Picture 1 (cartoon, helix red, strand yellow):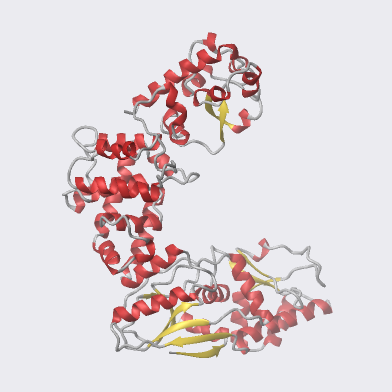
Picture 2 (cartoon, rainbow, N blue to C red):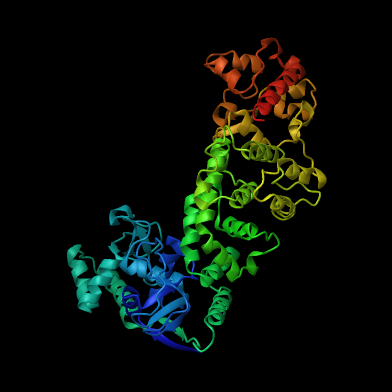
Length: 566
């Protein structure tokens, strides 16, 4: 059952300071932006409703249902602590975290190194202007808004809070501010008085925050009570700042075992460079248990137990995955934050390493002999390269959905090879038997069916491609169209290169290729250019009239480059 009571903002902030209000481990981290926090203070001073707060009341000396963490003063999350007995009665916030956290940061702390400021010349009849800034001087002195006073007088909110708390006299504080800034204009004085009064009234006088305390029937089994609170937490998500499906799953797992909070956070921080999101980590936990059908909403205590019980092995496995990517020269491909790389192939590389019959510590050294005696490296690398070149982890049609069909069919195969050599040929047969458009025999006539993103990565020596590059027609499209070449040849990878868009859209635009490349003003180092972009060295075929010969020769250079990696 729940009982409602109203409290002053100042009293709740004091209780947060004293850790009477805490955040259960099932809560996500702060997600509100500066704009939302600023608007919350505007709503508070206007006397608008901003929703109630729901808490679980846990009594002193009791064993709480969940581990919990204090509210943050600077926006950075704090770790949860698991207590056997509480030193005081505490209120575990299950709804209203974002609002309470915003009040606490605005009145007592900072966000991203910025403090909340209040424009004391705000138009109190319409809007109260709050903004975050590192220094008051960083904020504008004037406003373009139509209001009685066009100037601004910014004041740190936490200073105003402290001064009003110490004196309890809003009139005295208004006079102090007027004297400090030598304000003589009567309208400006009126605005300072009105704004300070509104701040004092809504922070210190009015009971503006409604809190519902939910009591828990401790006679029921702990796991049953936890499940009930998590379900309540999910229902409350229907209003306010919605949690994503992933947030809800993470909340469930943290509810089953508080150590999941630090594990999820640590894994994301350690491995975001290889595209490991919390969602991918949870999916990996399912797959390592040979469960490819499990959906996020079906997560249960066994998943949390598996993850926490194997966290060292999972961590070491992902470190070994990173080492593999570095040795295979694909690390820069995955590290490219401008692209959303598919984690699907890494699921199976991780799966194979995790299930090797070696200790957790040996996993860290698994690739020490990758160049000489490691039987897994070459087949694993070739499987990854063929898969990426053929784009099998992107939608391919024919009923192939990588995140569903692909994962299911690949897991069925690889789970039969635990502890054995990586099943390169058998995994490739999954693509061929589906059937997908797939090849390991690269030729001139199938180059354009390959995934251009990974193909260019290989052609340019496994280096991350700059965001400033265009896919450029080596020989200009406009000239080739005039000569009646077929679009399929003009727009072929054989006529594509990566070129910075400033050059592509500027000095090179529509110029005959031979003219452009032989002009030192445009191409300063022709030898380097020819080598970098795999341009045929025979200058006699650099003319648009010899375009087909150029394409034929360049396709040979491209194929030679691809085959180097195998």
